Image (spheres, one colour):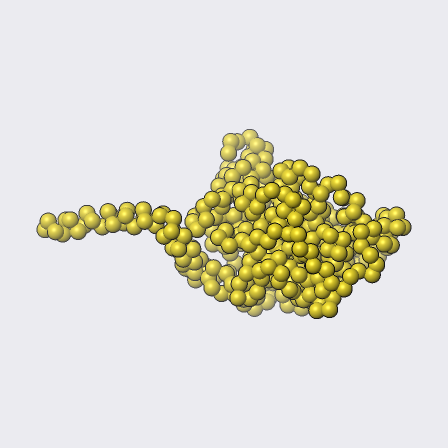
Length: 449
């Protein structure tokens, strides 16, 4: 009896010892990611991504088709008048001052400090922008940015419960540069292409782009993810871009990784061909000259809309989904929210009609892009905001996207659900402490964090 009692008492003691050993750094480092992997596998087994389907609240497919068609026709009829870019000075528009004409057949910039994202969760944003800044002499690294923009993840590597922030948005990285890096600036544009990348790189300005690609995820399966990449060169002879990829796997990546022009453009479509140039503030005129027509942000957004509209009308399957999503994103950039909402409707309807394939279906799309929330909210479609956020949070199995929680809170506040909205804002602050939009949401409601 005594031995049995000792055995019973020993069980909780052994559990405590095991927990204590788990947090010993060497053991923790080796076990934590495996537990995270197990958690993800179990979650996806009981809540497979294919079950998370967002259906926009529209009455008839034909009505949406008619409205979208009319919108596109109206846009086509007006574009010659409405989107003519403001002419640049002739010398700047015809011949960028920093780059000889024609461009060199190959350029490879070398004065960068390569960093990878190894040992950090979801750190491609901080790592790529760290390289973009250190190129110009900034004295920081990936953790400097990560601690500022992903405080829920910082200094807690290997602990799944403390690494919830899935992504850093481009505007957050731009804000970091504006607020924390004196003397540096950045320019973000949609609708990019290989030519503008080559022009910038040949002029001495590397480019950060965000695009989609297939990688091995925590479940060990091939799947679609969003990813930042730092472009430091190109080679017309091999038709490739030279990329400093922070994420090296058996599928590729790493330092001086070559990606074909065609492959890059195909993967770039899912993010509306977005790119960011980081540069010293006193060289802004050089960057604007190299950008040419892209120096006009409004022109770039209209150009992105042209490209995305053409893609949407000519492509099929997942590529057509990406194209319609990009149409919506371009409209959001132009603050045309009703048109954007209709475009996103089309995208989601195409997605829902496609057979689900774990390796290719972009079920993580809302991890990286929040355009639909802007569109539906400012179009007054609050229930669609809530439904999309619910679907998104279900897809990733737990509320680990502060953007989705924030926008759900915004829609709840707009429909009088004050307490629920406050709860969502507070949940967003758990993931991203001091997240400015959530703090502003609580302040608007007149409640404390």
